[in-house]
Image (cartoon, rainbow, N blue to C red):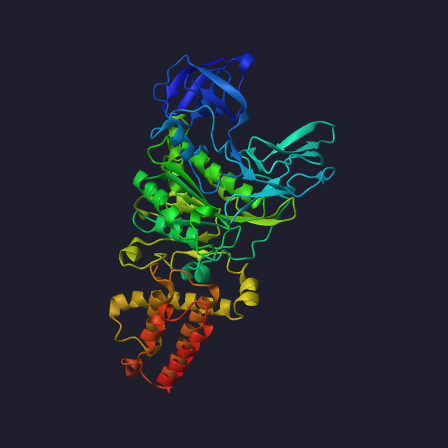
Length: 579
């Protein structure tokens, strides 16, 4: 057996034993407590292991036992609605076993082995299955149908378990492989967390992930299967925005990963999520949510594992044909754990002490997003939205800059906007999205033929307003020509009446795309009419007592989300006021 010869925080070194050698990426049990670890380095004499649990009470000369398999998680019915730690252990089951304080475990208990499921097998004996084919299902929750996927190629069904209620330990079917061996297929299967799950074909991301937040859907959209990051300093509203996206985005399943978050913040998430009403089903949003809780006081190695655990679960449901959204809060804390482990390994540091492989680690995470065609013929997507916590709100630090290389949508949060009660506090001058052009055909066919034109106009007006305001700081606004005063006035309407939302308002907390399009159309119509007004040698001062500006700002809450005809009032109002 391999004996421990050095312990440095979460890093353990063992002297190599030729008769019992370990391999890279292998999951191992460390010490008498059988702590879970992973081999991350092999030299001539020593093997380096990172431990995913606290190494307190661990001592030298204790044994390390290999498992001959990579760090993996069991996937099956029972994931949704539950809470897991960074390495996939079910915290609710462990609480029943250990009480408040969880003891070290050599086994990763993910699923409830005693719960019985009503299973339906929709194939017959003699049918041939390929990898990823769906051969049955069970209802995991009232809103999610959990499909059973075949894990083998060219396998013939030779027996079906006809019991009505089965546990995850009972076989569903028996199949005969091409070499003649008989294999049992279960509801649960093990999947390595650091190896992406395969798919048949990667498709173009041409359908938007609708969030109901105007600044995102209209200005800086994200496609289903896309990747986005949300950087912001402390108090800018990253977690609040991700909660809002988890509740309202049109993904079928939500995976929320609290990576290195403060304990009280994760407690709020765990307490609030079960009470959030899902607008789709009017039931708890936990019926389609998986929570992974990895607080800042847990071992730093588990932060890296929590990110990969979350994305592996998301890929599993994507393979069933679901659209999945993964919220990672925050990847900056994950990068900090990489820096700490790199320091303990005495690796040569790169910028600000982060390891030189930080970009490749970020790429391995964000590149697992995508819109794909599965082996069973279904289409599914995995959208990743990662929060970033740059120190001091400095977006030039390495984690933010390297993340921008692998995402196509960047929602920069501004602390000053958050303190001014502007929600969402997305800075429109720093944010961008490269998905807009990819989604233009969808907008043209499903929303409005003028959607992209109106979006371009709104973005252009805000950009022009920003330049004019720099001049106003020097010479004041009184000397500006009427055309520039108009831009400032319309810019205020865009900022207050369009970009700002009220999360407590029933009509404004979520806004469908068709209503967003109509609101943009009203603002552009007002701008064009006022432009004609001042071109006829009239002054905006004449409209100081007009109610059109206030009415257009209030239209976000004064119009319903269902009746688009409400907007006819604003077209008539603008015409009458300017007549």
